[in-house]
Image (cartoon, rainbow, N blue to C red; front, side):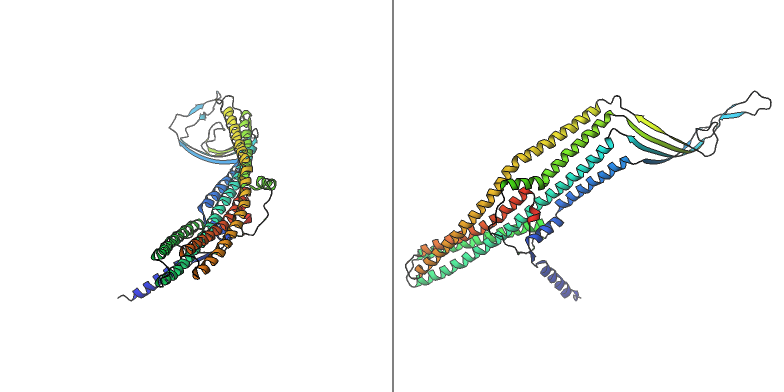
Length: 444
């Protein structure tokens, strides 16, 4: 009766095994996967698609408009109106016969000829809006790539710190074993052994904290790249800490002015405001259109006397309309478009005003990161040399257990600072690339 149970358990076990399979990611793979799956970019793509459809709508307004309509009316019965000519033997002529059922089929055509430039300006506004949407999409891509790359390097750092903390635990475990052996030989006091035990427990707590921090950074990265939060991650890349020349501030500014998507979006917004101004000013001009109509009706009202049968007629002409008074609506529309342009210009000026500060901070951040890494490596070399010396002297009885504990703590702290300095170098370059709008181009 339970023959299906082994198969179910096997399938469940396989599912768990597959779920626990680690995912190996390089930085470029993580960024590509995040850009492909994150809903932020899906929303930006939808905004671009919506803006591009408005271009089609604006183009459609320049094309002829062809409409078809049909109608039926049931009228009340009336007494036909007829006249009789004053001639011998003349028959009455019905002028308005009783036709209670009336049908109409109509085909109408309208082609704008002159709109004061409104339709062309509307098309240009739609194009600039679409271009601004594309630039904003690029800005979102840059921002998301920055978040993913930052989370990637933070997880690399957290894993390295966790490994360093576990290595420190193993080093202190060996120290504690040696201290207990020396206590058994009467060479160390109990208080000195307790010092090592306390240091070991503190190191174990720090290792736990670092493992938890690594788990949190893994969840953050998994969320950004669209993986389940419990997915084990294996990150292949390591920060490139080789010294690279930092571009000058002038070259960075020129690059940012040309490549930053937020500045491009503001420029397109200003151009759109110009087009909206032209659209609004078109309200002061008359509108001329070519119109035509074909009417197929029973009865056809253009044929006198009316006859209870289908007849077709057509007409072609020009129409001109001009608003003589619309409550100053055109004036307010022009004022609104002018205010929108001033708003976009102010936003562009504010962005440009902070651009040099942002670029200078990013550039100095890279230079400081290299100096910090150089100092951290030097401190690690010093701490390693001091630890090796104190360890040998402790083995010879020339140093106390406290001296060795201090050397071990100094070495652990120095290695942690070196790991952090490597991450700071990677993050500093990310900030510099983002400040110039070229982050996605510089990712491996």
